[in-house]
Amino acid sequence: MFTVVGESAAGHRSTVPLLPGHAIRISTGAWLPADADLVVPQEDTTRDGSQIRVDLAKFGPVRPGRWVRHRGSDVQAGAVVVRGGVCLGPTDLACIAAAGHVSAVVHRRPRVALLSTGDELVPIGQTPQPGQIVNTNALMLQLLLEQAGADVVSLGIARDDAEAIRRRLESAPPCDVWVTSGGVSVGDHDHMPAVLHELGWTFDFHGVALRPGKPTAFARRGQQFAFGLPGNPASSFVAFWLFLRPLLRRLAALGGNPEAPRIPVRLRTPVEGAGRRAHYVRAQLHDDGTATALPTQVSGDLTSMVDVDALLVVPPGVDQVPAGTVVDAIVVEPWCRERRPRTIR
Image 1 (cartoon, rainbow, N blue to C red):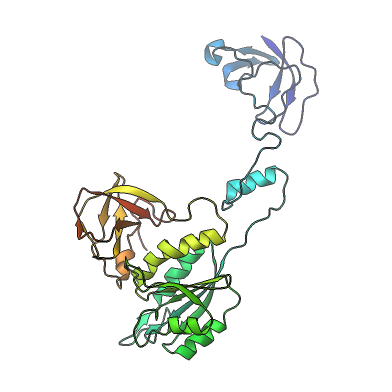
Image 2: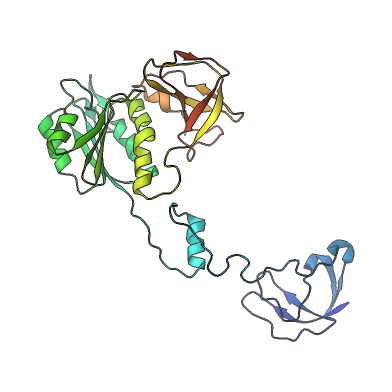
């Protein structure tokens, strides 16, 4: 039997001396009274006025220090609260604030200029005429770039004219990366490589042994980088994940592997290779560690990416990979795909 002689509440420390046979009511988060050697949950006691009795059958063995959080047990002096090279989230910022900081030194977001090219393109919301298509690549790429941490500056649409493309590119504000969609292959109306050369860019590569995305180009000018992405949406999508996203993560000084995670999966269906090129097959993952290639792999079909959450890696020189084979899968949409049905209203 104990006599309650006071209370210690959160933010209100008890100053009542704690003598043998006495108890002080304490709230969660409150300062532990001096000389206390045991904390008993309220539900393990019975109270009659100022008298309480501990129900040992409920409380169990007496262990001093139980239900007590010691000062400094969360973060000790000199400990690192948040390491560099991470994208700060709600819990990181809470830890920084708890350590007494009202601000933190961070790397700025990479700034990206985005330009679409093509006489056939019309803005979203405009009805395309015969031979025209809606400029959906710009929307897809802008969202992918923003999800990768970039600040995006839209340069709109440039027609298939070298001078028009040059004017649009020169109108861009200072940016770390230029990204163009379309006009990067080797046809008579593909002006992007020549314009970039004219503007002083040096190409590291133009053309990759890759399906989809073979025409992809990469160039540098001083501390700036430029990606020429193909006009077919699936080609731009794959090239983004393989080349552009890792660069953005490096520019943002994020630690760890800049590439999207790879996991082994077992094929539910056979997948085709691409001859001398590596084939990155759009696929859907399943909770049992298997994957199914999406029905169409046509690079110009937007619907071929609606359910994609992984790219299956088929190396060059492989004609077909049988069902049941374990292959690498690049996980491409971990943040926005929930494994449950969704309804569009």
